[in-house]
Image (cartoon, rainbow, N blue to C red; front, side):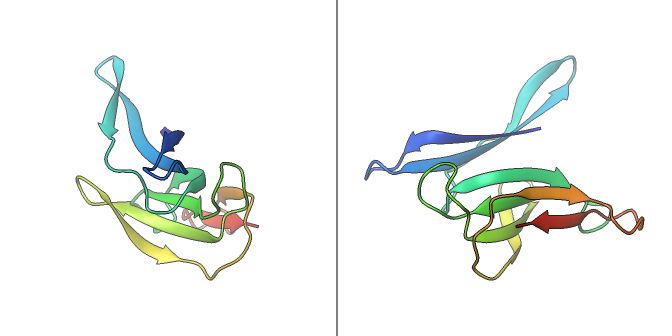
Length: 113
């Protein structure tokens, strides 16, 4: 489960994305990670196994305000305390993100447009 908070403004007053990872453990929800605001705004996010057995965070990032088209698709991996960007698409205008296993190989494919 993910939560993206876009209500936290930067010092210049621009909304910033602040991802939190929240999960159900021991009979309650708790925050597993809630670090620094992302450098680029996050418009949409999904968690899935696009690299095989390991879950990653796939995001549409960029734009300035919430719900603007994103400029990139990016794949981030969890490093124990923070996320590291594994891959970023070329620049574009992205408004939709989905993860599905289209070819039945057990690995989710990224769909973004």
